[in-house]
Each structure stands twice: as structure tokens, then as C-alpha cells.
Amino acid sequence: MFDIIVIGVGPAGATFARLVSSKYKVLILDKTNGRGKCCGGLIAPDAQALLASFDIGIPKRVVSDPQLLYVKSIDLETNMERNYQRHYTNINRKAFDEFLISLLPPNVTLKTNCLYVNHKYEEDIISVTIKAGDVTQEERCRILVGADGAYSRVRGNVFDDFSLIRKYLAIQGEYKRLSPINHYAVFFDRTITDFYSWLIPKEDTVLVGGAFLEREKPRLKYAKLLSAVKGNKYQIGELIKVSACFLLRPRLKDIKIGKENVALIGESAGFISPSSSEGLSYAYNSASALAKALSEIDKEWLNRYRNYTRKLKLNIFFKIIKSAIMYNHFLRNLIFKTNIGSLKNI
Image (cartoon, rainbow, N blue to C red):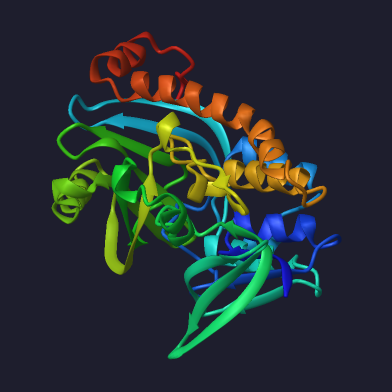
């Protein structure tokens, strides 16, 4: 019997478990080994600040070269581009996830290669059904936490709203890098996606990815993106691997924090930027908010969590407004023409 069972050991799940481990008996279940996903592997300033608040430094083994000090924004339809100063910590996402898992204290139980199937209530206790290989098991807890990403099975079992959520398929290829690239590039093209696409150098490789609506033949759109990137003077070599995952682009109505004795954190709850798909800061913020709300397990903990996440919802509201400007072809190119905020000497 556990106080809390967490489904998913990504940044949200691992952070939450670490924060509550001194007070509660915690079990984390993950369907793989919780290491690595389809992700650009950039820690934005907001997420850097939260890591600092946790007194967490990034080990050298996690960092990828080069460190990126600006983003090159490119409109593929007009060939206009501008450079904007940003500082991202460039990381190896797999190594970063392994690092976060290594921070879990020994009293947190972690079981990997376990698939969450469903849960049911037995009075005030939740019975969680999991599958490990061909073996079905039951674990029991007082609180269940869904931290299992955009395609959250926990959320699906609680709200059954996956078909209603605005979601994309993120496709990312890792390629050999044939020439120096010292910046993070983002691409805009309405014929490819109404969201955005990216290019990120990692040591001697480069990641090229995009987020595509499911109904719009994402693999064909990715091929078109790759062709456009190569035609934009980026020298990209042989393909090493391709990965894909679902990605939310939330509206306010897509945010669900939980129900009864089930809570959702990170992207499972809809906490991810609708303008840039940055998710690490939202993972840390929501994990911290839930840990604070669970100062005790009483009848008011979910209401406390709701109150503590109001600022996150407000933040997403402003990102929705920002997104409407960023992805408006006319407004974006008007901003490009004015050079507002851009680095004019690159």
C-alpha cells in the first residue's frame, strides 16, 4: 500500500516524487524506462530559474555542445529571417532524464516497463491495475498522479476527452551534421504546419523536427519540411534515427488538473506552452504546486492544487495570445520588417 502512485517518470513525475518523498510513501510506474523522448532538448530561461530554485545544477555529462545564444526565426514562404537573443541550455534529453531519476531518494520505489491499465475506487483507496510483460498486477494507493504525457492514459480514464483536445504529432529526425551550426532555428510555413518546426545542433548531429496536425498527413509534411530545411543552406547528412510523439497545443478548456483522488501534472494536465511547446517549466511548476497542495491528504488538497495552478493557467492564456501573433503570417512578417527586438548585426 502506497500513499501516492505516480504514472510516468519524466520531469513532472520525477520532480513531484522527489518533492513529496520525505512525507509520503511513493511508487512511480513508467511504461518504458523513463529515459528520452521526442524532444529538442533545450532548457529555456523559465525552466532554468525553476531548476535554480530547486538548487539543481546541470552536470557536464548532460550538456550538449554548442550552447545556443540566439534563435534564428525563418519564414520559409517569404525567405525573411531574423535573429533574437535567447539563452537555452542545450542538453542531451536522455541523459537529462537519467539525471532527474538519479535525484530520486532511495525511499521512492521506481518500477519501469510497467504499463498503467486503469484504476478503480475501493472506498477511499485506489486500486491501480498495471501490466508488466504478460503479468497483470494490482497496486493500491490513496492518491493517483498522472504524469504520463500528452497521450495520458490516466487522463483518458478519468475524463475520456482525448478526442476533444487539440493535439499534434511531433516528428523529429536526428541527422549527421556536415557543417557548423551555432544557433537554434525555427521555421514557419503555412503549407507545412500551422504550428512551428525546428532545427537544433547536438554535438556532431542535428535535430530537425516539426509539429503537425494528425489529419494533415504529418509524415508527408515532415518530408516537405526536411526538403525546405536542406534548401535553406543547412547541410544535413545521413539519417540516424526518427522519433515521434503526441504533443498538446492547449486551449484553456484543455487544462484539467484532476478529479476526486486523481491529479494530473505536466502535459497530462495540459500544461505546456501553446506558442513554443516548451514543457519543462510547466512540468516543474505543476509538480511543485501539487507537492505544496499535498501538504496533507485531506478533502481540500485538490482545491489547493487548483488555486496554486491559477498562475499557470493565466500564463498559458497569455501564451495563447502570443501564439495568435506569432503564427499570423501578416503580423509575423510585419514584426520581421520592423526589426523589433532582433539582433541586427548577425
